[in-house]
Amino acid sequence: MDINSSDSQPGCQPYRLNGWVVSPFSQKTLAYLRYKGIPHQQQTPGVWRLMRTIQQQVGKAIMPTVETAGGDWLQDSSEIIDYFEQAYPEHSIEPQTPKQQLVAHLLELHADEWLVMASLWYRWKVPQNRDFIIAEFGRYALPGMPVFIRNLMANSIRRTMMGYLPRFGINDKTQQGVQKYCKQLLALLEDHFTQNKYFLGNRPCIGDFSFFGQLYAHLYRDQGSQHLFDNTPALRDWINRLLLADGQEANPANNPQYRFLPDDEIPNTLLPILELIFSEQMPFIATVVDNINQYVANKPDSQRVSRIVGEGDFSIGGVKGQRQQFSFVQWKLQRCTRVWQQLDDQQKIPLEQWLHDIGGEQLLAIDIRHPLKRQNFSEVLA
Ligand SMILES: N[C@@H](CCC(=O)N[C@@H](CS)C(=O)NCC(=O)O)C(=O)O
Image (cartoon, rainbow, N blue to C red; front, side, top):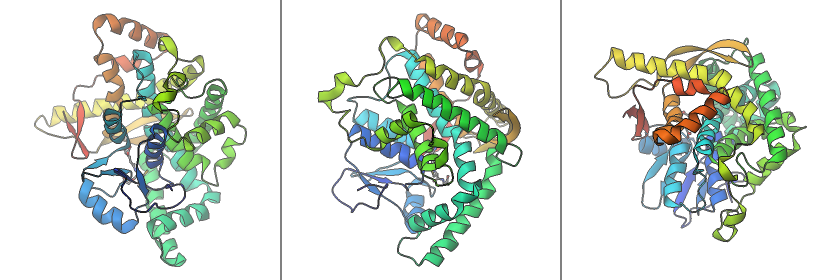
């Protein structure tokens, strides 16, 4: 059993994943565990477990978290997946060649930190979702409680979430842009998955799991946005492939069949998606990095930067807005920039040339002066 149906009973599995079916980062992590065939048990934490045990262990009431049989806790979907990639290196989801590695992490950055705007808008602003999502949240937060109490709780979560939307730059003005962007992206994904099994060939990369989390947990599952997938059969097949994965593709006996594309190839159908990332998301990320640089310049003795370093201009679907700058985004960006930092000068040249060719040179110009690292479940200056 898994979080897509109901709780599994505590058993003797080495890892326990705490997360809700409606949570994109939980679905990202769960899809990964399923695909790799890593033994795990899923739990849907109620509000008490979230506010007490999980808060005590990782410092916030957040999902997903993973508990190991040894009593260690992991938090943040990317960090959790990194942990498992080390523990289970067979059939790695990390491509070994530079372009593919970079693209995998750009896709991760995009789904986790940008597509989330569409996920949030459709879930909380589309009226047809209201009753559905209140029932869902009530069921997971307060299992076993009467429906009217669940509804009270779920309504209060809904109000809180609606209050958060402007932080992400989602308001009456930008919502048009959010919808336009989302529809454009889904069309591009459809085009890609008509020709490719996963983003980079016959094996999913981290970007597949990040996109799956946002698309499945919110847009595909929520009643008010399901219609977006009416004309995307290939995208639906890709979702189902990751939803039903059972470790078989990652099984050593099947390894040769399930590989990334040879010769560091990036399918042409990914280029317009990368263009979308470079034209709208990357300029905003550059403002986040600038403000972190500024923050540390003003406070040279600080060990950490604040969670939100300011507010920056952005544009989505061609509509301009302002959104808060979460410093965490730089940590996610560093997962991209470290790809070429690890290369020697000779190896860097073709990668940089390729970025120029596809309009991504601004990525090279982003000046991360103060890298962040994760320590005790939060970001600190490295
Ligand atoms: N960067 C985190 C994000 C996790 C996240 O935002 N989780 C949401 C639910 S999908 C949550 O629990 N939010 C509550 C909070 O941030 O306090 C990850 O990748 O795991």
